[in-house]
Structures are given as structure tokens and as C-alpha cells.
Length: 367
Image (cartoon, rainbow, N blue to C red; front, side, top):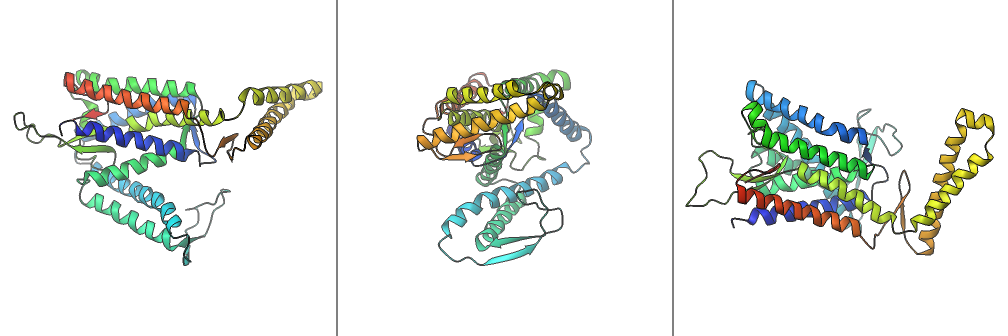
């Protein structure tokens, strides 16, 4: 029982990354983090963390807890309802579901083309998902997230949604982001005490103001021979950032595995030939105006897409179209994804081991 939290956190984190990464393949468009945004992320995160710490320490009259609880309640409603909608639709697809038309305030919702909609059509399964989502999120808010199972369910669903709609645009960005956040974690956990007199990260993470689904929790094992200090935080915890950020890298590797399902060398040669042909045929005026460069890029994209579709058809591979390029609907070999996920689980195990052996708190962990 003493080390049950290690198995629990590792299994939950690994499963969350697996599901979120694979669901990202179903998204035709995602928000990709650029290299510049990856560089800025640790600085912005530091500013936000320090701001919250200063509010908690010097402005206790500010009711930060109620704001965060309301925000987590809203996230929980969307996370539970959205993830419950598809399973309910699948279960009830054989039945004739009644449909309801619900008016929507102008500007509140948009269709796939970005146009504002004035009403939405809901099925019985949609209404059930909404009711369950609101009900469970409200219950979690009312009891202060003391039910760690429900708290963790909502937290993992939020993480899955995040990994589904947000990605990295390159491996370079992932290196910059992970490296920067490593320094961010190391400083705010190990270095902040000497500067601020408190462990800023743990002060914020274990604050009563943060009792929503912003972390994974597991009840602490109480050793009768070495009981915890009265009033200490009663849970082991794992920060959501320590799942989300490695999950972004795992999702990128999964897409790379998908790209390797087709012959990328042949595709690259076709794109380069189309690109070169446009430049060879371009006039001097078109070259000076920059039009040729744009046309060449479009021709390379078109050649890439056409050959990917042809190769996939020849190999009987079903493709899913994205804003830029294609990814197979089913990926037979997940070499890079599996290695990334295994490395993450191994790293998490090493961090837990360091926590136990040294008694120090690795970034994002607490027991």
C-alpha cells in the first residue's frame, strides 16, 4: 500500500497520454505550438505561478478559491459532457432519438466554417451527456474535490481534450518546450525557497484555493510508526503539466509514425520536382514579385498530397485529411510513439524513486 500511488499515477498518466494522442488523429485542425511560443511558455508559466503565490501570501482577502472553483466547474462540465457524448451516441444509434432545437445567443457558437449559429439541434444522448457533466462537476465542486476518484476522472478528461486539440509543430519546438519547463520546474521547486522563503510550487499546488481538478490525487499511506505532521496535505499528487507536456511530444511522435506508413522518400522527391518545375517555368517578373515562390509551395503541397493518396490507395491504407497533409486512420507500427511513452513512464518511475530515496520532492510530485 505504501507505493500504491506510484502504480496508480503511472497507469493513469500513461493511459491519458495514449488516449489523448490517438484522439488527436481525429482532429482535422489543431492549435500547434510554435517555436516562439515554446520559448515563451516557461516565462509565462513562471509569471502566472509567481502571481498566484503573491496573491495567496499577501492578498488573502481575495477570494481566489471561488474563482478557481468556478473555472474548474466549467471545465469539468465540458470535459465530462463532451467525452460522454460520443459513447452515448454510439450506444443509442440503433434507436430513434428525439431531437430538440435550442436557441443560442448570437456569437456564442460557430459552425465548422466559422459562421455564427443561432440555434443547435440536440439529441436525447446529448442532453443526457450535458446533465451528467453538469451534475458530476457540480458534485465535485460542492464537496471540495475530496472525492479523489472523481477529481482524477475530471482531470484526465481535461488532459485528453487538451492533447486532442493542441499539438507541437516540430521536434525542435518539443525540445525547447520540454527543456524550458524542466528549468522552470527545477527552479520553482528547488530554488525558490532561497529567494522567497517558501517552496513556491508546492505552496501553490497544495493550497486550499486549488482544490479543483488541477492535479491528480491519491490518499497518502499513513505509517503508524511515522505518522504525518498534523494538518499536512493528505494526498500524494502529480501535476497535470507533468502529463500534458510529455503528452504533446508523444502525440507528435504518433503523427510521425503515421507519416512513415507511406514512402516518404518518394513523396519528398515528387514535392521537390514540382517545386523546381514552377521555378524553372517562372518569368523574371514573377520571380521578382514573389508569386513564383507561392506557386511553387502550392505545387509542392499538391504533389505531396496526390502521391500520398496514390501510395495509400495502392497499399489499401485509409487516410484522414488534415489542414496540412494526411495521416492514416490506422497506424500499424507505432515505433516512435511507443518508445516515447515507455521513456516517459521510465522517467516518472525514476522521479518517484528519487522522491522516496532522498525525501526531496521532484518537480510536480508530492507524497
